[in-house]
Amino acid sequence: MTQRLANKVCIITGSGGSMGRAAALRFAAEGARIVGCDMNGGMEAETRRQVTEAGGRMVSHEPCNLSDPAQCTSLAAFAMAQYGQIDVLYNNAAGGRFAWVDQLSVEDWRATFVEELDLVFFMCQAAWPHLKARGGSIINCASMSAKIGVRVLPQVAHGTAKAGVIGMTKQLAVEGGPYQIRVNTVSPGLIDTNKTRPLIDNAPWRTAMVDKIMLGRPGQPDEVAMAALFLASDEASFITGADIAIDGGATAW
Image (cartoon, rainbow, N blue to C red):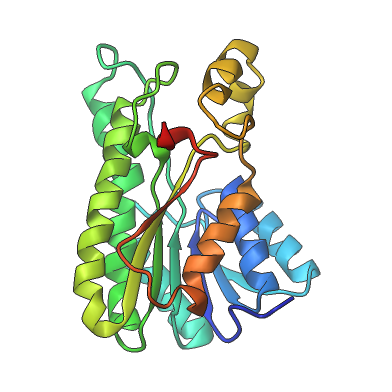
């Protein structure tokens, strides 16, 4: 362990899922004190167990519905009560709805914006006054879907919402600059997670997706966590308003 996040308090949303758990484990291994949250209490408890057994420090505020601004405020207050500071906010949590444009309901369109865009804004707003007090880093999870269309994925709502995350991030970087708040995005491509595995196991779908990936394989959750770790650390002290593509080259051609 190199302790790249020593003395930092990091909120990681959606820390019960594949990418959130990988980030919690990776950040904790680098010395961070983790504040996790998830809608699924059982999965969150498992992440906390793994972090603790590995020698890390983690507390959880769950179940936590981040589509409710009051619960976002509560999460930030919980982090302050537990550790007295917030240094990093990793907005990893998301939950979109997928359907082709002529089959997408108004309800699913609007729900995707709540579950992928609103909750990022609500958490940024909740953590903002605490970050203003000492500076810090916000990492928002966008997606390659914000940048390209995908023939085999009905992502019209998801891609639009994630494009909104990138746009929001650039404005927050401007507003956070005077307070030394850095705001960046990571944009994963096809990552092998609990949610995507059923699709990856579908041979025709996998072939169509992997053909677009220069490195010829799906990514792993820890590969996303490593990029987020860099942005959370002081090594990225002059990086803000940026987006890091973690997609094996899929959006480069």
